[in-house]
Amino acid sequence: MRALCRVDSDTSHLSQLGCELVPGSLEEGERLLGSYMEGAKAVIHSAALMYTGFSWSRMHQVNVEGTASVLRAAAATGVGRSVYVSSVAVYGDRDGPIDEEAELSVPLVESETYARSKREAELQAGKISRDAGIELTVLRPAAVYGERDRVFVPRLVRFLGRRIHPLPGGGRTRLAAVYAGNLAHAVVTALDPSSGGGCRLYNVAEDHTLTLAGLCRSLAGQLGTTFRPISVPSPLIMGLSAIGDAVGLRIPEAEGVSLQRAARLAVRQNPYDSSRIRRELGWKPPIALEEALRRTGSWILASYGGSSDS
Image (tube, rainbow, N blue to C red; front, side, top):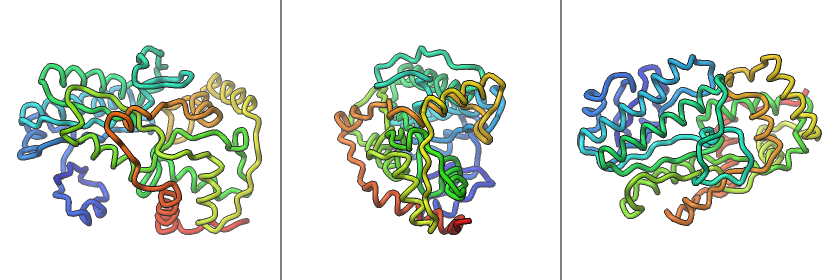
């Protein structure tokens, strides 16, 4: 197994897994990327810039042009099977249920650079797959949590460190979330040659039923802090988010997500249907919810330490 990694990345975990590490970048061009793929039977492409305030030109360069370069390099090198990790963000802000047949027609606002780049990258990937005749599986995960997460988990740690924990609607809604280990299993499942050919799309937006309150309660218990939930009416959350968007407020370190979209994800039930990957590929998440939460909590303790009540 060979992994392309940034020169400044923490690759200790990959080293422990026995990966052959190749320092490099998606911007190195198709010829050099192709040289890294020599001898490979399949390519997994999951690298991307996320919700961190990058300009559209930079997002496009890495997320769109980089994806095209990876798949063209794979085709030129003779790698016949690829998995591209996209995102449910491509659907835009719409009501559920949302399955893979939903057209990507909901307009995306200019500030949603991540969603725009993922949608355009998917279009590029599909065209390259058809033109080059390579087998491509596109996975669309929702929020991913677990060990080494630098997006979702740090926010949870800060939230749980507060004296009280306001939750939209009491945190009873079903989250659009998947444990990283189960998402990895979905990637491996998609690589199975018996899973079919062509270009296929799959939502990977729910491995187990998980609520925001359940997630917070479990992690708070492992961190040694008291979980003090306070239910905030969902209409109030939506109203405040609309006002925030109107005056130009943004979520720190997630500037590419509107407040209203973030609020809807928190107050409504998971709208993304993940039944197709189970039905067609036989995906069975191997890691139970309790174990996923235990592993996540253990990693938080090792990385951040416990939280103490004030």
